[in-house]
Image (cartoon, rainbow, N blue to C red; front, top):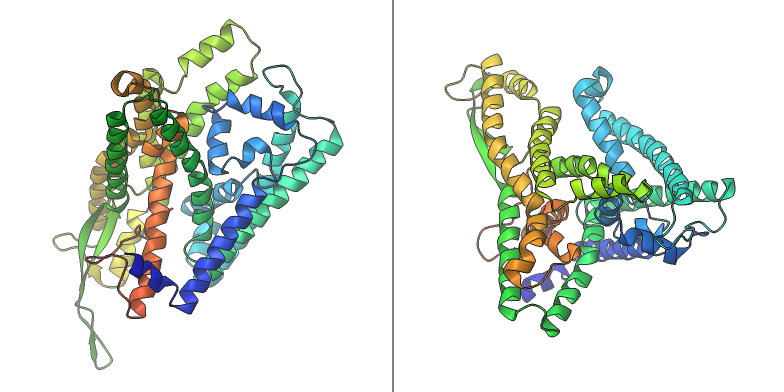
Length: 451
C-alpha cells in the first residue's frame, strides 16, 4: 500500500495537484484562526460552550470551528452551498433556469455566474445577521461579546466575513481546476475532520485515566469501522435499470444496439435531508439560548434536547420527508424518459414515454424508502450512542467523538473521500500504474444526483 501511495509522487501532474490541494487546505485552516477585530474571544468561547447542540454548533462544524471564533473564514463555504441549492431547485421549477440547464457549456457558465452573485448576497446577509447577533448576546458570566458596538463594528464584520466567504469560494474553484477533486466538497471535508484529532485525544485521555474500560474502547473502535462501512454502502448503493438502444442506420453505418443502464442511487438526496432536518430541529434550541433565564427557557431546552426521544423521532421523520422532497426536486423521471425516447433507448418490457417515466418513478420511490430510513438512523445514531454510552460502556461520550459515528459529518467524509480516491486511482491507472486497491476498483458517488 505504501508503494502504491508512493506512485502518486512519481507522476509530476498528479504530484503537483496533490501538493497544490494540500497548500489550499493550509490556507483555509490559517484563515479559520484569524479572528475579526473587536471581539472578546474569551466571552465568545464561553457562550459557544452552551451552544454546541444548537444551530450555531451545526454551522460551526461546517466551518471547522471558524464560526465560533468569528474568524475571517467564519461563514465558511455555506453561503455558496446555499446559493447552489437554491439555483438547483429553481432549475426544476423556473423555466428560465430550466432553459439555462439545457444550453450546454454556455448555460453552465451563466448558472455559475448567477451562483456567485447569489453567494455575495447571501454572505452579506448572513454577515449582517452575525454582526447584529454578536451585539445582542453576552457570555454566561454577563460579559459583552463586542468590545465597541456600533455601525463601524457592523460594517467591519460584514466586509470581512463576506470577503472571507468569497475567498474560500475562489480557493474551492482553484482546487477543482488545478488540484485534486471537487474543491468545494474538499473544503467542507477538511473543516469537518478538523475536530477528529481532538476527539480521539479526549478518548485516549479517558482510557489513560481508566474512566472507561479498555474493552469498551475496543468495542467503540470496532463499532466505528462498522458504521463507516454502512455509510459507504449507503453512499454507493445503486439500483441499475437496464436500457436497450434500438439499432438504426445513419448513412452507411449501423448505429445503436448497445445495452446500458440507469443507475438510481439508494440515497439520491445525499446528505441534504440531514442538513435540512437539523436546521429545523435546532431552531428551538437556538431560540432557547436567546430567551431570558426562566421556566420557558428551561422547558424549551428540555423538550428539544437532542438526545430526547421526541426529538429523535421527529428528526427521523423529517429526514424521510426531505429525502423524498429533495429527490423530487433534483431528479425528473419525465425528463429521463424523454431523453431515452429521443435517442432511441427503451427499458425492456416498458413502453417508451409516459409508461417509462412512471416505471422509473415507481422504482425510485421504492428504493428511496429503505435508503431514507437508514439515512435517518445513521443521523440519530450518535445521539443514541451518547444517550446510552454511560450504561453500556462505563463512561459518557463527548459530542465531538460521538459525531464520528454518524450524521452529516460522516456522510460528507465518506462521500468526498471516495470521490477523491477515485480520481487518484484514475490518474494512476491511466499512466499504467497499479490502482490503490489490489483487486477491484474504488467507485465514487454516481454523478446522477450527487451533491
